Amino acid sequence: METKPPLPPFTLETAKIKVQAAEDAWNTRDPERVSLAYTEDSQWRNRSEFLSGREEVRAFLKRKWAKELDYRLRKELWSFTENRISVKFEYEWHDDSGNWYRSYGNEQWEFAENGPMQRREASINDLPILESARKFRWER
Image (cartoon, rainbow, N blue to C red; front, side, top):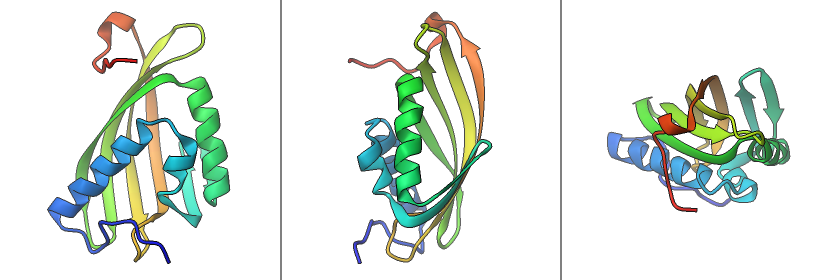
């Protein structure tokens, strides 16, 4: 069984490492890479969509990043326990018409003993913004 360190039970230090690893992976916008952080039978709620298993997660991420162009994310640890972590996050993106958005949300994560995420619950709200109001800029 492959492990995805750091492993539960989490400390403040290892929870922060897990959050940073998730932020780094999601900012690649690579559905294959990101999906490998989840168990084969992971369960997700993302907004009003419910997903079951890594294949559904991968398909979801492909759809997400086809719509949310130039996506850039920041995550922050909110709390943690033995095998659970909660984060708050914000990300910016634009649609194919050039309309920019900042999305805010919270996620609750539950991890398997060997480290991959087995459950993800995400609540997200989108706010239209002007391109000049962007916080996250990066080189392409």
